[in-house]
Length: 255
Image (cartoon, rainbow, N blue to C red; front, side):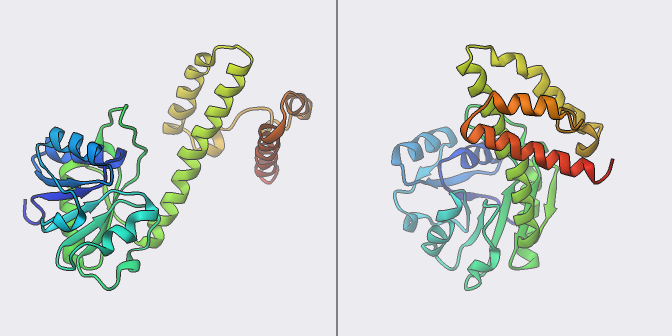
């Protein structure tokens, strides 16, 4: 493969862990890893058989993949030498925030990562952007090593994908947490919801989400909605009412 043949990684979280493992598995060596938590850096260095950089200034590779929180991206990149190529994995940071640098890009995996759960990176969408066509294609080729779902996307497009991902993943997970919390508080078995959750996602392979919607709000079943509102309190009650209203309004416009 021409272009990027090795890298250093900044970050020791879930994204760094999964992407680093995938690069190693596909024969792309990691030269060094840096993280604010030295013990976590050493753990990854042992796993990847690479060096630990005890400061950002110790990183000397030609390409650095920055896998840190959105709030830390600009601070980290500002400390890297202007001569090295850099890509960050954030979904919400504008590439043009780094207009003073050359060879800066985005390597954004559109997926949720947890260290405790293995994932098939080969299926993960990778959104690529860079400040030059040449570097963009280098990042595309690098992404193609670990995924077969690689796309160019502008900062504007990526931010919109990221927002949609918050709706689809983060908010959905929080709603599931609310369901579990409710059943736990009633000493009931939340695992009984698992087949329902699996079917909810599986249906989307066959149906548009609009057509897949079911439930009392979809049917405009006011009696059931009112009954269930009374079973709840606080933020949970407010959220149930707001979501029910949103569903009712969505389908009242089209039915």
